[in-house]
Picture 1 (cartoon, rainbow, N blue to C red):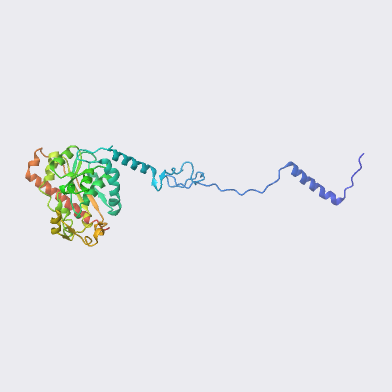
Picture 2 (spheres, rainbow, N blue to C red; picture 1 turned 180 degrees about the horizontal axis):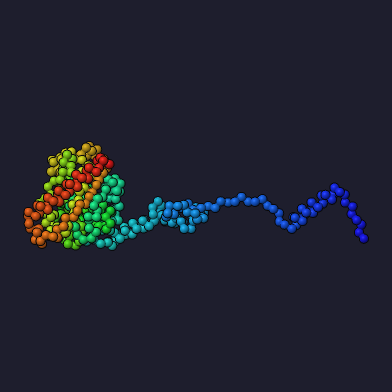
Length: 355
């Protein structure tokens, strides 16, 4: 029989506590300090309803639904796709793999080269406001008749490329230009590539019969070369030649009023001796040219407004109405008055020449 163990009163008080502690350590896991909760990262995107997305974000801060598009390939600082397009365009231009029509019009060159050059001018520099674009047909022929001014015929180019850029149908305008434009080196070939052609009845009729938009400026040199003191006062609209063409082709006449072109090169004097010596219709003297030399050739940033008026139909007249001289004069005055009234109306909308 085993001998009894004598335990003192003080020791007995301690042992049960140790035993309980030991049994607790043996039977249950140790309690560890609780970890601090990590906040869930939410998506930084905004939903279509305008609320903040509540989905769990990935490493880049966006959820799987709102992941940004992958970065586009680049060649140096340039977009790789754009560079490849330009290289392909250059290759096809070199080998002659492109099309032109019977007038020399090159639509691809106009849309991909000339248009990007003109866009910043009418969008940001002159801040053109376009009115009445719905009056320009999306298909079929039409005759655009506008005022002409500005010392240099920039207004015609702005109207042409503006319609190509801003009109819902992105239509090309085939401008009728004077023979001087086609006699000038460098300018002549570019004018043909843009789709311009000589201002003659035969070319105009062929273009209209093929369903093209044709632009004409009846004031001619008298309008574009008039002095600044006569700004926005329309000159004579010829003898009704454009009305005769519209009646023969049975196409609508769309009046066009261009505000802003008169101020880009304000001509204060016409040096006629220099004009005759150079074979030019006029030689402009402006406050900045020739005083400032090449700097004087920079156009001023005037505020432009271009409005297309209500079309004037011609298909209600008899086929031989173009031979009626009185009708030609009547329609010519009607178009001229329409353009003049639109000019006066839009001039009042501008806060100033440059605003």
